[in-house]
Length: 100
Image (cartoon, rainbow, N blue to C red):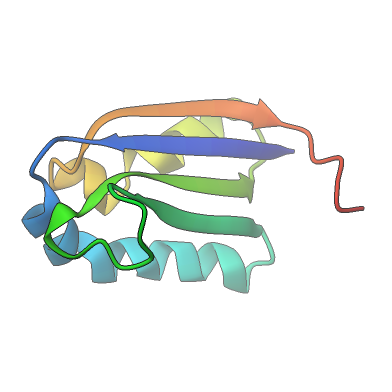
């Protein structure tokens, strides 16, 4: 089943985000390589593709996991969690309807 993982950044966490980004992306790449990643990306803190020093307000991941518990465990082990980037992480089941 698909699950949405949404992380909300701590204000001012851009330096921690940048430092943990390679490890964060490596985990996402592993999901993609396994054919389990639907989409992933950050929320710019301002209306710009590259927000510069304004940074990001969070991230969104939609991926396939065997269960909610597995999705929660995966999300809890994210390098952004360990680095203190996220103030909160929410994991919810997701049903994709479109595009088919």
